[in-house]
Image (cartoon, rainbow, N blue to C red):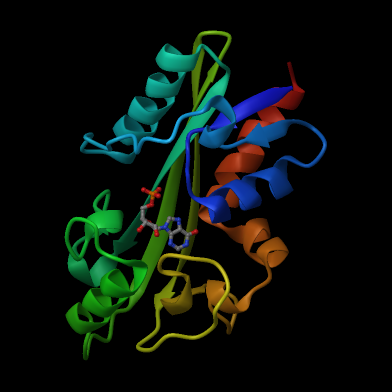
Length: 191
Ligand code: IMP
């Protein structure tokens, strides 16, 4: 089976392809010639994942899925959440977001956070949703160079390294997106 992952993020694509293994072939948006950014105009992860998947399905008529992820920080009342990508402003970099997060959490004793991912799959016109979550803490400084986004400051519970210090394989085994992806792959294998 072939699925288009509605993303331009090569890290996400690589993670998804690794998790899917031989069970299905995952291509990015380039594969269908889609170069535009699909705007995330929803107010929830569910809405954004659905918007992106529907955009691709309606325009290209292919089986596809999209994800949306949010980092929820307890001491910030769940922020940045659905706004994680634009936390430090429109067109900000991963580093801008991390810097803002560390400033907001400066001196905080409660550093608990979680990543949540929602995947929206459209298969033969039917809609399905899968969720994954990982809990951890936000470190006061950055460690590691792997991964992307908030990885250098997120240390998952039960580990003493950040996501950015883990191999892709180890991160996938416990990450929010890894968990949601495996739920989707397991579902596809039941068909
Ligand atoms: P989106 O799902 O690409 O919209 O992700 C929203 C924000 O969360 C972006 O700023 C990403 O960098 C960040 N993010 C998504 N997935 C991960 C991850 O696996 N590790 C670290 N940050 C992530």
